[in-house]
Length: 145
Image (cartoon, rainbow, N blue to C red; front, side, top):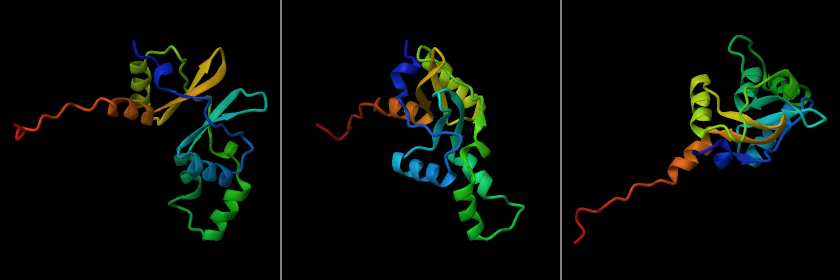
């Protein structure tokens, strides 16, 4: 049976609750990812932060503000201000289909993977898409002789 361990990203990049939002945005661009597990000084998972979390804090449709105010927020606001605390998690031996069901049901982009309470990976929608993209059907050209 396919498990989370077969698909997950091992030892994902993490941030702390004190990481400034500008740094998170830069890391997301560098690492080409949309979410990071958030760990405390002991390495314990305390949350997850996504690009959507950051967009929501910067782009309020009700409050009109200037670009300089966004710039100031990026430098002064930290992950702690917008992360999701106590995220749902899976273990490496969780069946992959179960993790996929969770991602779909809750409309999440990722689930942290814990083994014995320690962060060991992250499983994302992209991990599932990459896995299924490997199974390209054999296309037979009808015009081949």
